[in-house]
Image (tube, rainbow, N blue to C red; front, side):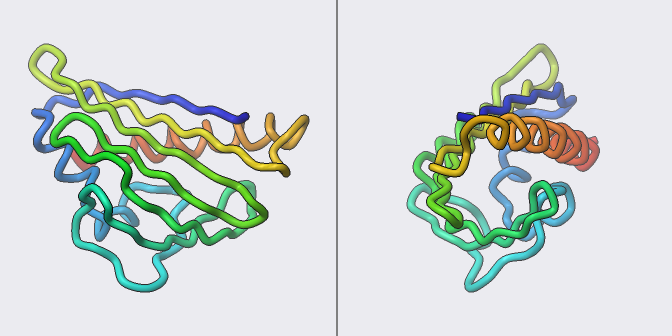
Length: 143
């Protein structure tokens, strides 16, 4: 099962990080895998929110149906997604105070019948790179 975990230190308070993390209209500014939304998009993510996103990983487009499974401001946001070919994804944001700023960790997991062997390793590598780049852009928006 491919797993990715990336972190950054932000020189802002957790509430400021939270505001950006739950703002779907701002996703195109930082998420490198984001290709667009389909259907209605909530302004902010709260527990139970749902939306559909077009994403691209490894050059392959996919539509993911997301639902927010936990939203505990300003520290924890969890989403579960259903993609094509039985692929499921899980995303967890951990936002914790750290010194004068905030530690931000973004974790992603992928499961599905097509994600085994070499394909799992490729997804993990590509998702890791995309997550690192996306989190860096996220951090720049907080500066």
